[in-house]
Image (cartoon, rainbow, N blue to C red; front, side):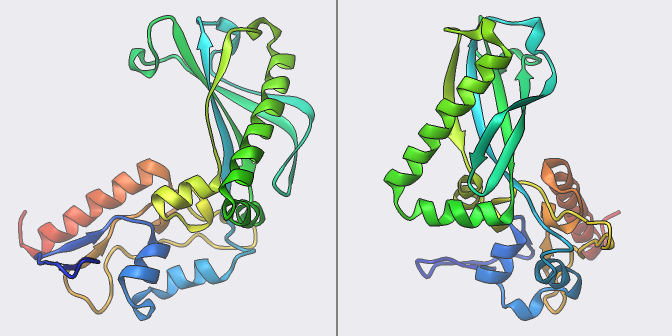
Length: 237
C-alpha cells in the first residue's frame, strides 16, 4: 500500500506508480529497486538526453486560414535561457469547438529547451520576481516576432500564458522538466523499461519514461499494460 506524509496508510492489493519514474525511485521507492535499463538511461546523459520547452499560448480574435496547422519559420535571433533561437513555430488549435469561445482560437509556440536550460530556469525560479520578469520579457519578444510573420494579427492577438521546463517539474515532478521521454541518439540503443518492479510482487509502473518517445500516448499504453499484468496475476482471461 501507500504511506502518506501525514502518517496515514492506504492498503491495496496492487499499486501502480503512474508518476514520473525519477520521482518514483527518488521519493517513493528505494533506488535499489530501479531496473538496470532505467538506471542506464539516467546515468548516460549524453547518450539519452531529454528536452523541454519555453512555451506560449495566444488568444486570437477570429479564425484565419493562414494560421491553420503547424508552421515553422525563421525569426530574429532570440536568447531563451542558454539557447539561441533562430526559428519559431506556431500550432493552431481550431479543430475542436471546445478549445476556445466562439469567435476565438488558440495559437501556441514552443521553443525547445535543453537540460542546461532547465538548470537556468531552476536557478531563476529561486527568485519568483526575477522568474516572472524574465517570462514577461520573453513574451514581449516572442510577440514581436509573431507579428513580424503575421502582421494581420496586430490588435487581434493576446498572451494567455507562458510556461517553462520548471512548470513541468513543479506540477508533474518530471525529470529535467521534460514532457517527453529520453531521446535516443545515434550512438545509443533503444531501451524499454520493464513495467514490473523487481522484488515487490504487487507493484507496477505505468509511465511515459518506460518507452520512447514518451508523451501521453505512451503513458496510456503503459497503463493498459499494467492492467493486463494485474489480470494475469488474478488469473482473469
